[in-house]
Amino acid sequence: MTSIASAPGKLIICGEHAVVYGQPAIAVPLPDVRAWATVAQAASPGIVCAAPDLGETWRLSSQRDHPLAQLTISTLRRLGLAEDIALHITLRSNIPIASGMGSGAALGAALVKALAAYAGHVLSSAEVAALVYESERAFHGTPSGIDNTVVSYEQPVWFRRGAQDTPPTIEQVQIAAPLHLVIGDTGVRAPTSLTVGVVRERWQREPDLLIAYFEQIGSIVQQVRAALAAGQLTQTGELLNQNQAVLHRLGVSSPDLERLISAAIQAGALGAKLSGGGGGGVMLALTTAERIDHVRAALQHAGAAHVLATSIVT
Ligand code: PMV
Image (cartoon, rainbow, N blue to C red; front, side, top):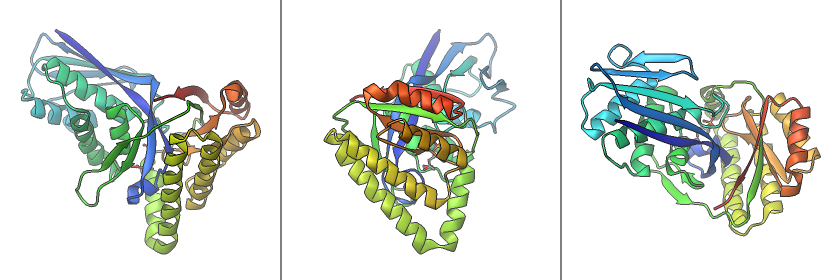
């Protein structure tokens, strides 16, 4: 018997970093880039997991500290399965790694869903998100929880983390007019923990200033939500530019990101900003349908390592 499940990549539209400090953020799934997990019965007891795209193979019994091994263990426990069950797991993904498109969370969500399907269970999106969150928390410090949420729910989400250990607020985001996004990857791998650490350190030194920045971002995110619901794309673009200006002041942009953002704006994008942790990784440009190719070409010309165009509709 074999089961297969997948989960999408994700893009934070606005609110990154401030979301770690209790402000809201908006994220969308990226249906065209995905992670897949296949769970098949094996000939001998024990779980072997192969991730050929990552060049990794691990055996659960001997590499229990691998992040995905921990997630496998907690999921098996939730499903009432023994750890020595004879399984072969294969993980695949076409989501760029460590670039802000949620590859780790998507692999985790696909793994949880495929194990559940193998056991004949259907887990709710909230349960999948919670299992992936625990594993992200164990290995990435203090994630807000937005990544695991959007890849598990697979719909645009308004996300606000709960105080202490209370559950987050997760609401659907209405998108009245198609959102045409062009994503430019700087090709610079920037671990989220690095920029989150830079912001935390600055927040400790200059709390009043940083809290003011987080509040500005929170207010922009509220306005983006209203603009998306009203189909006001020009207004949304302006707000994304404002969000980028605050992220720049926070210190999480980079010359590569700034170059791609300027190129997109010059090519007629309605707005552009970094997405995710920053310091490298990806930026997004909001554009009209007519300008998609123009913005894509401008990003390629400006040196983007990869460019991806996608349209979000609800
Ligand atoms: O780098 P990404 O795409 O995983 O996004 C990180 C978003 C942050 O707000 C910077 C951190 C977080 O945990 O929300």
